[in-house]
Length: 233
Image 1: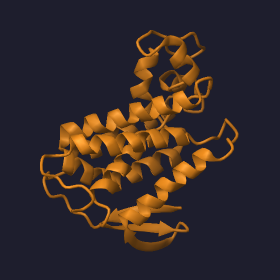
Image 2: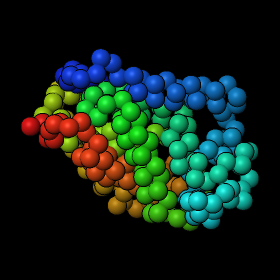
Image 3: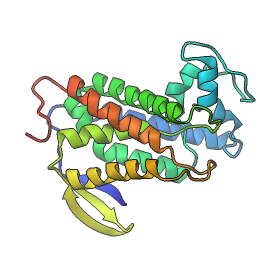
Image 4: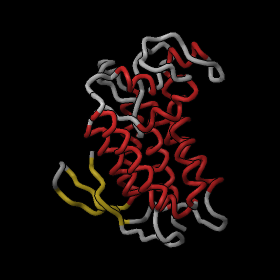
């Protein structure tokens, strides 16, 4: 695939992307705190992760499902907390890079407050989609990729014609339109979701990505600023 490194899309309404930057800082801080506290022991992180079998066992409005987690976190709370934890540095950097490149313009079109609600809602829907597709799984879901997928879908619907700089084969810079770059990324998510499952210990949560994409595409229609045009019109 590709790695996005920038776009030709200046802010038009807001002076600075405060929410986008704050989300990135919060994700990095959580990762550092976890690492300093002994990140090799994932028991603490699993307390904040979404575990589909435990989520359905407790119910969305229930309490804490029986588990061996370090902390007794209500399962409904994990629908928010899971998106601020990451498995390793590359997991964190990948998500934050996509958020940095595409989040500012979505925040610009929605406004600060609505963008924060949008981001969190996409993350929640992503986790639910993941849990619904594999309800018996006991594997922990963590990471911001579901919420970031919603941002990607919104950006594509708002600015498909904007030029995006990407790295192809990890080091070749190429400028293409967002429609090609993000469209290819989205198609890849659906293709991978239909493939035979990977080893559960290393599997990517493709259905969380798809859930976030669908949520982002739907929410941007109703949450964009009045007068904001879709599809670059």
